[in-house]
Length: 176
Image (tube, rainbow, N blue to C red):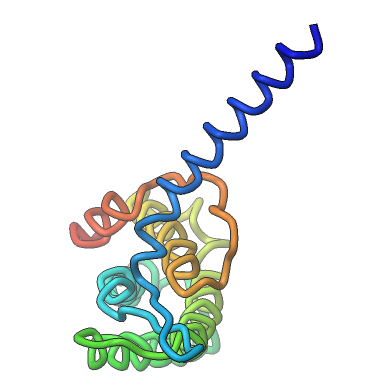
């Protein structure tokens, strides 16, 4: 009797380890180590950072979004957008090479902080805004953990987002 649960437990562990490896493999391909320095292939995050920037730009360009924000909120949103643009420009300028993982983590922390600031201004008004605005917000939120995982800011795969990264990029590309 005690042998069966052990075999099942071992099989379950083997399955989970294999499944974890399949999930982590694309993210691990983004990183390499040389002389004790972990580097990041910037092209891996570039596409998602650009999509996040496009999504926030779409929110900024939508008169319906601007109409619900106060003057102070518009100013704060614009500051966040400037920071997001700076990160996206820096990532794009380096997308042909590799950088130290800590540099990528710094970029993503700045991106995450700025995106969070921008979305915090819009999110309270989602019930008043057209459905596509909420969809763009959800798509942006779905891409942040993907970028975080690529630079090893999160060690475990977060809960399944509403959209996969390709779906989120496609939604943002369609715009409002």
